[in-house]
Length: 334
Ligand code: TRP
Image (cartoon, rainbow, N blue to C red):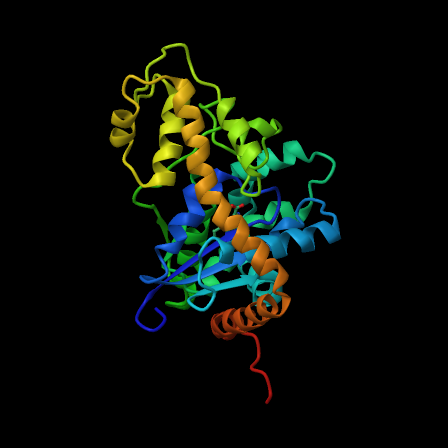
C-alpha cells in the first residue's frame, strides 16, 4: 500500500511499433486505473537487450514509448512512468531472486522456449533468467496487482511462487501479486487473420494498425480487412473478421457491439469498413498530435523522466534494503 492505495505495476518493451491492439487492449484501460491504484509503468529496457538491439534505435524507441504513455493520457504526476534501467535496484534484486529460482522452473517457461527457437544464434543467459527480472520488477514495488496479457501469466505465476518461497524462509517480505484482469479487455485481432491476435511483430504490415499510422494508411488497412462471404453484419464467433471490426468500432466509439449491429442493420461490409477506419482515425489522430507536441518539449519530458526515476528509486530501495538485510548482507556504514 502507498498512501492508502493498492499498488499496480506493469511494463512494456520498447521493441516493435505499438498497435491499436496494445492501445485498446492495454494502454487505454491503464488510464482508468490511476485513481484507484498507485501505478508504476516501466519501459523495461533491461528486458529488451535479451535479444540484440541497435543502441541508437533502442534509445529512440524507449523514449518514444515513454512519450506515448503520456500522450495516451497517463498523467505522469499520478502514474510513475520511468525507465527500468534508471533504477538499479531491478538488477540487484533480480540477482538475489535468481538464487531462489530453480533451473527446472525456468526450463518450463514457454516464452523462453519460443524465443530460444526464434533466436537460435543467441540463446543467452539473460533470455533464460528474463522471468526472474520480471519478478524483481513486480516485487520491488510490493505490487498488489499486475495487468498482464495471457502470454505473461506463466511469468506472473512464477513471480508468485518466488515471493511465497522467499516469504516462507524470511517472513513477510513481499506482497504476493495477483493478475489484474480488466473488466472489458477488448482483444483486438489481426486484420488479415482474425483468428490471431493483432501483434506488433506480425510480418504482414496490413495485419496491424500501428499507433503512428497516418489516416490514409489506417483507412486502407481497414478497407482491406479480411472478412467472409456471409454478407450480413452479425456479432458472432462464426464471423471472426466482422466480429473484430465490430469490436474495434465499439472500443473506439464507446458503443456496445449490439448498438453497432443495430446501427449497421441492412448495410454491407462496404459501409462498415470505412466507418471503422473513421472511428480509429478519430481516436488515433489526437494521440498522434499530442505525441508530436510532447516530443518537441524536451525539457518537460526530461523533468518527468528525472522525477519519476527518483520516485521509483525511493520505493525500490526500500524493498531492496529490506531484502538485503534478510539474506544476511552487512549494513552499510554511514
Ligand atoms: N515481459 C513483459 C512483456 O513482454 C514486460 C514486463 C517486464 C512486465 N516486466 C514486467 C509486465 C512486469 C508486467 C510486469 O510483455
